[in-house]
Image (cartoon, rainbow, N blue to C red; front, side, top):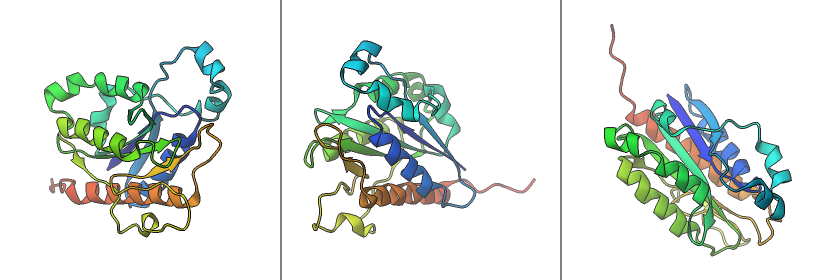
Length: 208
């Protein structure tokens, strides 16, 4: 079985969440887990202006995924920042390039889900994940969220991300807040849970 954790990140928060999702997915025996990113679409001068160039060097080694390779995986877990309560344009551009896969039904029956990051506690985490789910449904994915079996989203002692639709993190208005251990644990749970569902749905190999 193969799982892809595919993310876009401006400052590295979603990369850290992606690594945690992958860590959880690797806990499922026999699961080959790959972490990749989508291509940056902002011009270099704008990345410099918003102080993202230096931050992106930390995950520049992560390979860039092509839309065509999605059909190689049994499970795909997508990570994106929120932009005005919706999917970031970089990730949307990637998804918009999957029309050929949609036309062939190449992703029907695959298992998928999404995780996000927002600047503020109520900055559109759930709307973004739900919007992402709509796109996955159009491709025929079996969509998996982050069930309340993960107890980390039940507490209220501290500010934290985490929704029943998928893992999430809060970055702060200037990107000053890094994913907390609770948020990373939610990401690990989602990765493991999604891979476990994919394992259950995987066809049983027939003897030769």
